[in-house]
Length: 294
Image (cartoon, rainbow, N blue to C red; front, side, top):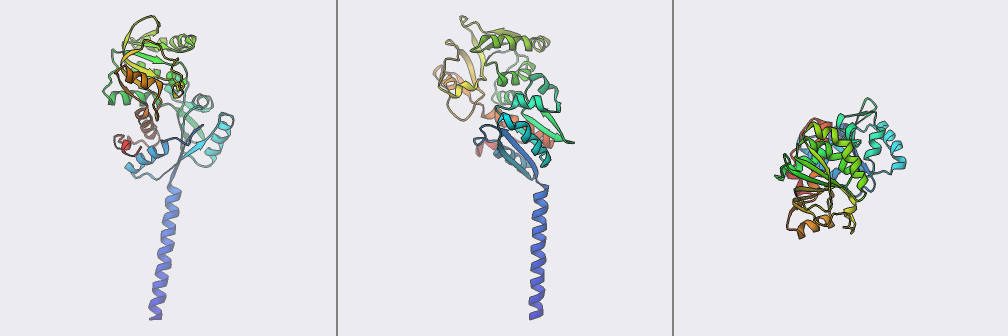
């Protein structure tokens, strides 16, 4: 009886050792990723990427890291040393990421914005999926872009980050407006060559004109405040899209008052995340099921 007890005890020890070995092995196999920005505590990216990973049985460790521009370069260097394979970059670091990356995709180079970094052979390789995320979400919502009249409000990093993909959809025209209108003129000049190649007319919005747009895109973060003065008075459009998400904005309120169809940017967030996931893992996740847990 004692001998049997000893055998059973040894078996239990071996089982526990095997379980510990498997757990350690799985921990080591976890791929390390993160999203960097400031502030970052509100980010839905960890939840989205973990959900995508479960679709393919990928063991993922995806962390939100609060980083300010002053220590961004130092943090990136540390994450490389710690074995991170990829990083998502959000406000206010996308343009800084563009400047720091060792290599850039053609689109990231064109937009001067990086929201997705792959770390390979100790190099930071920058890409951008924001424009693809926006376009994919709009098309999913049955908002067609080809031969349409579009207004883009804002002339900062967010608007320039999506222009490449918007132009590639060959709308009839893209009108630009901004509180500092000279920035819209600079933006129009920068994108004029690509627009011409795609037969897209670029125009600066004349506030005195009465135009009804097929699509109005708000690319200003100012809409998170209560200042609605950034928007032209006589805005008319069939579909209004705010690239911000998570709360009612003056822009979306204005759309509702105009009895127009509208959407916030949650779908853009999900689709740009799916595109980034595909860059890292070479797998295209299903994005429909994610909305049930967000």
